[in-house]
Image (tube, rainbow, N blue to C red):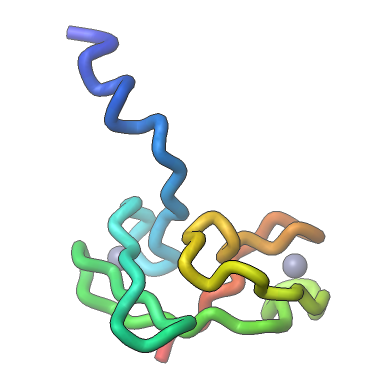
Length: 79
Ligand SMILES: [Zn+2]
Ligand SMILES: [Zn+2]
């Protein structure tokens, strides 16, 4: 029963701040994400809503960049 899903979870995906499920997907608009599980929409902020640290977003398509490198919190704001 264990180990079968290991390969599917090697790809890092940030969990949805709303429902906690790792179903965030980039939308057609850069910097916007949508959770296909709870259907909420999020905007990727350039400043962390938790600690206020600014982050240089070099790769908008990389979903791993939605995590603040300073405090480890999510930089997604619901819209
Ligand atoms: Zn969600
Ligand atoms: Zn932060």
